[in-house]
Image 1 (cartoon, one colour):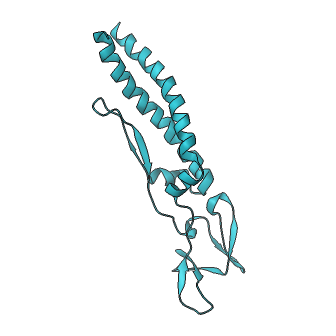
Image 2: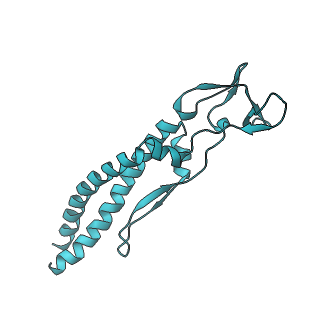
Image 3: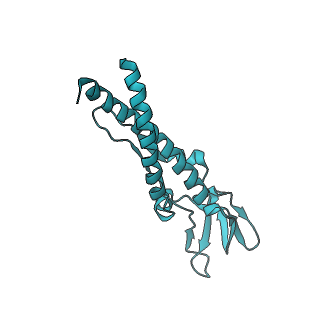
Length: 161
């Protein structure tokens, strides 16, 4: 390996990793939004990205967060219960009601007044695995990395000539 190759290839690898990570991130956010019914803006707040550097050539992102209450999915009280658009489809949760000053959807555990339980929608980390979005993103990322690496090597070689 020549001195030029030792300088160009690591820099090009870091560039390609970061660019392909950004493209994967966009794809995952779009697919998760379709699968869960959570807005893309809210999903981005639940995701952490980390960049590749010359020292550590690793780039990626993580999805965190718990399942939000159904009230976050455009919930409305109806005669039959609460209607919400969790998982991207509107559905009536029979016998449920909106309480806590309009901040929570509840359902009774028995015929008595108490106890009650909160109803939750999809959790982004769980849906990422359930819907096979992570596997599709990995395949997409590999293809993107190949393309970006070729571009980055060409770009970095042009700087040295």
